[in-house]
Amino acid sequence: MNVLHVCANPKPTEESVSKQLAAAFFGKLIELKPEVELVNVDLYDEKPPYYSYELFKRAWYPVFDEGYEPSKVEQMAMNYAAKQAELFNAADVLVLTTPMWNFALPAIMKAWIDQILCPGLTFSISKEEGVKPLHKVKSIVLLVASGGIYKEGDERDALSRQVRAAFGFVGIDDIEVVWAEGQNPLFFDNHEEKKALAIEAAAEIAEDIAELETDEAVAG
Ligand SMILES: Cc1cc2nc3c(=O)[nH]c(=O)nc-3n(C[C@H](O)[C@H](O)[C@H](O)COP(=O)(O)O)c2cc1C
Image (cartoon, rainbow, N blue to C red):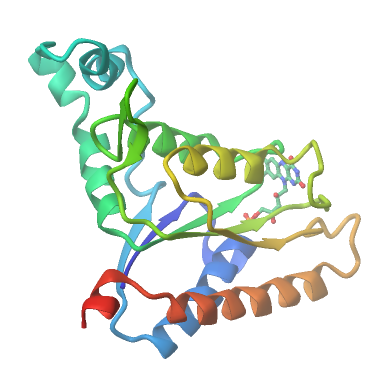
């Protein structure tokens, strides 16, 4: 099983609740399935570029004009996206570790999503066939921490809605969310208790993921 872990948090683990969820998740997953092939992408170590006009042309002009020949600059503008898409396409499971910032994903995670969800890399798109995945990701695990509390369907939560919509577009509907909510100690005396519950939930989701049937498990 190939797992791609993308982390958008500049803090060290001891100060980051979402990274502590990731530690619990991967601790359990690797205990249960030591053969997991894990690839870590720390977005603060290697920052994704913002989407550019050159990347737009390289990615989208050929969708509308099969004969379009991208320039060298346009070709190069796709380097990061192509490298990351390769990691994404090879994964069975994608784990996103992220804080909630201003009710949404940190910009660095949004930038990564903008890069990889690119026609010709992770999906194909045509009038006849619509959107077709070029990846094999079966499940996404979203590990998130927030200062406040957001009930399911809360309109202020742009984060989980965006993840569901963006990856649903490329055919991934199985999205497990582990949410350490109420982490602002000014307003929630029981923030440690809430964190402990979320850490437990992260380990439980790891148990489910360890059970996931992947192509090599089916073939073998
Ligand atoms: C720039 C910034 C914006 C934030 N915006 C929100 C927010 O919109 N809603 C919320 O509930 N918490 C917000 N918080 C609080 C964080 O979500 C909270 O501290 C959480 O624990 C961060 O995850 P981490 O501990 O993994 O870093 C914000 C924190 C920062 C630094």
